[in-house]
Structure formats: structure tokens, C-alpha cells
Amino acid sequence: MKALLVIVILLTFGAIFFQYSRNKDVKKLLIALATFGVILSLAVVGNLTRQVIPLFIAHVILIVSAWGALLVYLIRDKYYWWVIFSPVVTIGLFLLLELLTGSGHELP
Image 1: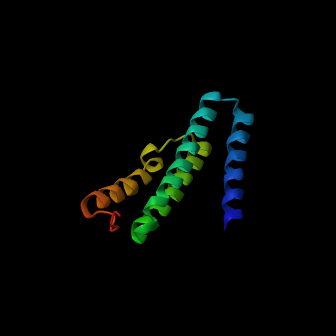
Image 2: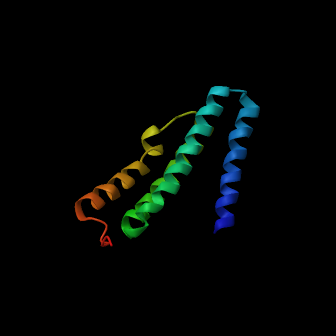
Image 3: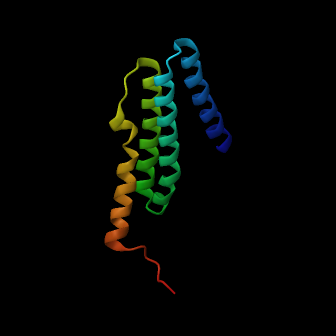
């Protein structure tokens, strides 16, 4: 599974730089790289939600859809920002749940 994630990340980088070599559009390259960094950051931060399994599954689905939206941007030049930043919702919901119910751990 980890090898598959590394391959997908490398393929995405390859697709970004392939599009750049065809179009020579620096603005599109920078937007794609920044978006890719944001998606990877949201995926790492989303591991916080692992304690609440339904929320974690929703987060994984939203990360995959954000990755798909990045690929749509590379192919069709349509930037669906609301799909790309949708994993923030699950992180926000988790933080709200933690605020309302607490972590469930006693402090020593």
C-alpha cells in the first residue's frame, strides 16, 4: 500500500511536469505544485481524524476527490477549489468534536 502511494505521488509529479513541458505555462505549474502540496499537507493532518473512523473514511474520500480535481485541472484547465479544499471540512469537524466532547483522556 505504501509503495502504491509513492508511485501515485511520483506519477502526479510526472504529470505536472509533463504538462509544463508541453505548454511552458509557469503559472499553471506553480498553481499545480502548490495545490499538490496543500493536498499532501491535508492528507497528513487528516491522520488526526483516525480516532473517529466514519470521519476518517470521509476524509480519505475527500482527499481522493481533491487529487482527482487536481488531475482535472491539469487536463481541462478547470480549477475546482471547493473540491480541492474540501478535506478541511472533516478536520474542522474533528476539532469541533474534540472541543465539545474532549479527547477522552485524563490528564495526569
